Length: 134
Figure (cartoon, helix red, strand yellow):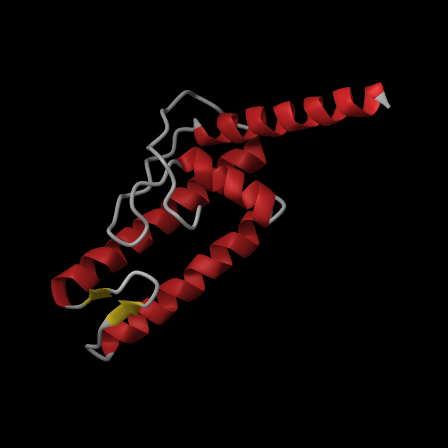
């Protein structure tokens, strides 16, 4: 039984080390927005590891669907509303958010490639995750 506890602790430590290693890859920081706040690359790596079991493709597809819906809102010259916070984006604010989503997807693509290649070169974390962790 004691060996199982040591194994579990080692597994957790290894998971944290791998997530931190990928987060320090030569990837830019995820931009800060009023929607998700300041999100550290390492937090996204940890989130993908826990919520998506490391499946970056599935996580990226989720964000690509969000981007498509965002583009649809923009094409209709409509307002993007976040009901959980009451935040509404339109016009220049909506365009700035769309740009940030594009940048976030690009950063996540970089993190996914780093995870696949096991790269780590020491870039620092961006900050803390927003309330939803992703």
